[in-house]
Image 1 (tube, rainbow, N blue to C red):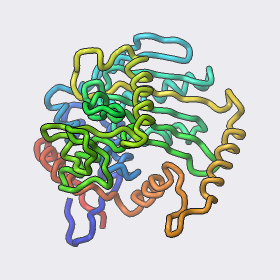
Image 2: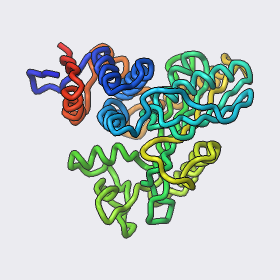
Image 3: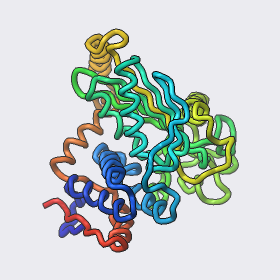
Length: 357
C-alpha cells in the first residue's frame, strides 16, 4: 500500500476485497465465509462507515487467531415455523451468518409475506447498512437489529451506569430510485466512533457521553478510562428517554426473542441478531409501496431549509453517493486501518494492495 503524495490514499475496491478475503482464508476461515465477510466489510467502507468496515478486519483476525471466532461450520436451527426461525450461530462470523439469515428470511417472505430470523451466539456483524441493498434491489423491505450481550456502554436515561450496547437498528426501503437505507444506533453515537475519536485524540462533536459523576462531556475517553462513564442514549440528556426505549426494544427483538442475552454468562465479543424481510406484494403491493415512499422522499427533499443550511438528504443518500464514487475513484481508508492490517499481512504472507493510480 504505497503513496507518493500528500493526498489521501485510495485503494481499488476489488483489490481491497481480495486482500481481505485472502487474509481471512490464511487465518483458516472457510473460503465461502471469507468471501462474504470481506464483501460486507468493504461495503461498510464504500458506504462511508469507516468504523464498521475494514477497520474491523484486524480485530476479527485477532479473534480468529485466539479461537474466539469460529472458522467453519453451519448455524443450528433451534426452532422453525413457516415465517420464523431461531438459530444458534455457534460464534461463526457475523457477516456470513447475517447474509444467510437475510437469504432465508427472503425465501420465507416470498411465501408468507414476511420472514424473521433471530440468531443467538453470532459473532460481530459489522455495518448493518451493508446488508440492506441486497433486499431493496429485490423489491423487499429489510430490518436488521443487533445487540452484544457481553458489552455494556450505554446508560439508561437518568442513570450513571452503562447497561446495554448502542443497539443499532437498520432498515432498507425500496423506492422508484435509490432505496432509503436507515442505520442508526439507539445511543447518541456508536462505540466505534467514540473509540476512533479517542485514539485520534479528538473530542466528540457534542456532549454525547457522561462521566462517572453524570456530567455531560465531549471527551470520548470517558467511555473507557477509569472511572468510566457511559454513552448517552439517543436524545441525550434532554430527550434520552426515546433512545432508552428504542434500546430496550432492540434487546427484546434480539436477546428476548433468541432467549439468550444479558441474563446469561458472557461468551465474548459477538452479537445477538434480528433479521426480518417483508414482501410488499403480500400487502398493498410493491408499486403502491414505492408510490408512498416516493411521495415521502419528494416531500422531504422539497421542504424549505434553514438559512445557510444544506438541502435535505434522505437516510443512505450520501452513503450510496460515496459508494458509487469510491468504486470509480478508489476507497479512502481511515488512517489507522493500513498499519493495523500490515501486521497481519506479514504474519500470513499476503501482499498489500497498491494504491489507486
